[in-house]
Image (cartoon, rainbow, N blue to C red; front, side, top):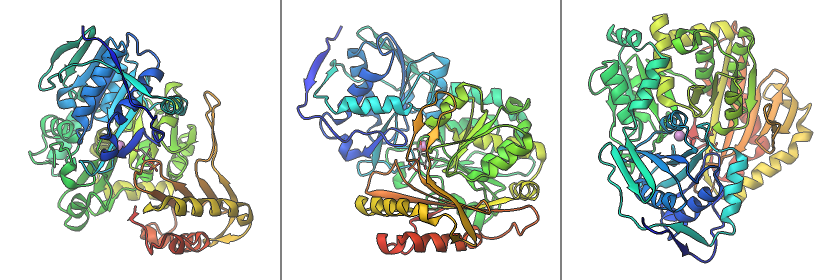
Length: 545
Ligand code: VG1
Ligand code: CO
């Protein structure tokens, strides 16, 4: 039995505050001596059930994944974990990790990923912590982990050579067993339970061509097995399918800017009927049809309206939820279905209580995230299958499904403008200045309507009554349009300002406008009030979605 010993590192690291989704920093920062260890020590001191418990461990394969797995195994053994479940090559998507936690009654997971941020020695690394329900740790836990790091000067570890992750098998470090499982299998069998894959398979064989871009990140092996083996899509359907440490230099963020090759195939060349991509850790999805981009807020609304097409949801939905900046497209559907619709702060952790208490079945975010009660994370490939399932039942194209949807429910024109890598003091200054303006905005004219309500969103969890303040500035207009301003909690360089714009057009209105044109008055009024161009020195956003 290797003996546990303490390593002292002197000054505590004061900057280990988890953001929207775990601790995310540059790979360089994580490579500082003792940096990763300090955060992991805080997790092991704080996460309930470590002594004698089972932990799920893996990541999206980015640079640093393997080293972190070795360190966490050695520290886990020192802290008395009984069992660790990890995967071949340590490759594990975020939704698959959530499933493994739930299947194995684990105390939680440590997921090594900076999600949609770039990877490699010059990119980002991240450590996400999930709890025993399978979902991202709630704020109470991440706050406790952070405060633990503030006084931490030492950590507990054992010496051990790296465990081979090349094949399925069992190993041990002292009393702790390490089970290397195939990270893909359990996830695939979950998908087989939720969807009628035969139906999808026949549909895509009838001249409905599909393409998927894994962006050299974690979903490659999952998508290959699902789409090419099970659905029998032609080989090569899954592009960039091998997870690479630096994602081949690309940004594993499935949007029109960073998944441009895929977007060109569908929108410009119009070579396929359906296209999709997922992010670094497999929890996000982008859905495209021939000449049709599906806005993620609309995607949640479409899944909700057509949920009964999938066997898993054929008996109806308990309710739905969306994050505050996500458009109200799903609200309109929920109203027609007569089911509850909740509005939560940004970040998947806020859906956990609603899912656990069975108040909702589906939920989503504008940031290309959709999911259901099958796990406690957003799930990229699940969304892809769900879309294919609906299309296979309706026997229609993406563009037809979208236009039918808007004709029935109306359309929420929607866009998000991101201003990335802004000096922190400038971004915070702009935010604070706009917050101070909010009370005076009420009653004034804005974007062709007038301001009815303006505040900084605060959330009372309907299940445990916990309160979360300061979740984004909202300006709500008389006609239901909204402008929301938030600062990102996932960036690693300077600050990122996100501006979310939304305007509703009823079923009888013109539903085929370009969103940037439909929203131009809102955009112009926000830009001039916030002085975003002069304050940031940027004439246009870095990314427009
Ligand atoms: C972003 C998104 C948010 C999402 C979060 C984590 O956060 O806006 O909706 O939950 O990323 O996604 P922020 O604070 O940068 O806006 V992921 O794919 O990192 O797990
Ligand atoms: Co992600």
